[in-house]
Image (tube, rainbow, N blue to C red; front, side, top):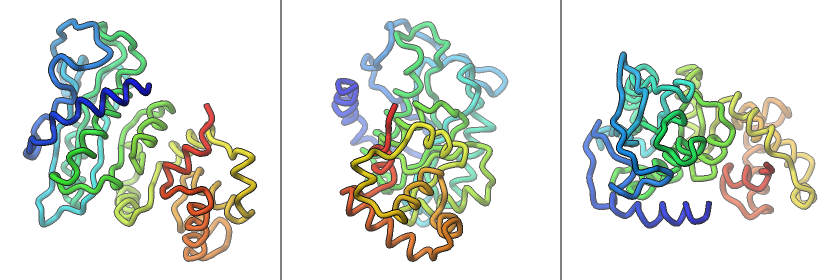
Length: 276
C-alpha cells in the first residue's frame, strides 16, 4: 500500500498546472500510468443514462463562481451496486444542486470490479476514489477549495472504501438517501471545520473501531462518551442532547481530546481507534 501511495504522490504533479473549467472531464490517471490494469484498451460503455464499463476513470468538475464559492468540495460517487454507474440521477443532477449552495462538486467515474482488464478487481473503485481526493487536494489552491473541506457522497456501504476515503483526508461521507435539509446541515458542519457522516456510515465505522486501552487511559469518562458520540456519527448538537450538556462543553471536551491524543481532526481520531 505504501508503494501505491508513493505512486500517487509522484504522478499527481501532472495536473497541477492545468486549469479545469466547469463540467469538464478530468482523467484520474496520466496515459500509461494507471495502476491495477492488464494494459488492455477498454472503451467506455454507456446506455440509458448508465455507465456499464469505465475505460477512462475520471471525474466531471462542477465549479461554482468565485463569488458563490464556499471553499468546500464534494466528490459524488454514483451508485449502481458495482455493476453500473447511474451517473445522471445520482451524479450530475446532485452536482448541480450542490453548486446552488456554493459547493464545488466532482462526479466520479470509477472503474467497476466486473471489468476484465483489472489485476485486482476488488480494489479498483477504491484506487480511483483515493486518486480523486489527491487530485482535488493538490489543486485546492488553484480551484479555491480548502483541503480540509472535502467530503464524499455515495451510495456504497462498502466499509473498506469508506474508511480509506476518510483516512485519505475526506472529512465527511454522506449516502444518497440523506435528506436535502440534512445535507445542507452537513455542509455547514464541514464549512465550520466539523466532519459529518450519514448514520448508516457511522454504524459501519463503529463496527470497525474500538478504543485501545492506552488511549482510554488518557481520557476522562465524559471525553470517552463524546468519542463514542463522534464514532456514532452524531453532530455536536446531538452529542450535547444525548449527554445532557451544552454544545460549548462538547467543544471544550473535543479540544481536550485532540490535545491529549495529539490529533486535530475526526478522521485522525478514527484512525487511532481503527482495528481491522
